[in-house]
Length: 180
Image (cartoon, rainbow, N blue to C red; front, side, top):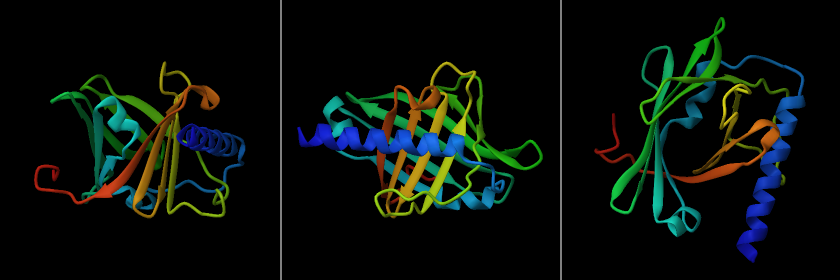
């Protein structure tokens, strides 16, 4: 029951953040340098993913060049259950966008939402925040990354935050097998 309440609070907080970002007036366009907080290796935490028997790892690198590159994979039942290639690059005159290629499929682009202020959540400011949307995509239509220290959450959802699913990651050491 405690975990259910905690999950409900997390979902409500995520929906409020998405609504605030969607309704906020534009302040400034971020650059790719503003996303360096995303770099590193991240792995989902128990108990949520452990209950399903799967675990997701997400890795982001920032090589010299015009993009951050990422990949993720979900392992469970002794096999890879899914994977995705991702990048954050500059489009539309330098405006960052998120591009995902789930399971090697066609690229799906999400435009970055501009942020007018640093959001306060329970008295804590995130160390990093990035929100992207593509209202014409089937699912997800929104992607929200939040970083608090060595914790990262990635929430995908439908329009206006409907049907949210959050991956809660912790920073891990990038072992040789994870390094690009």
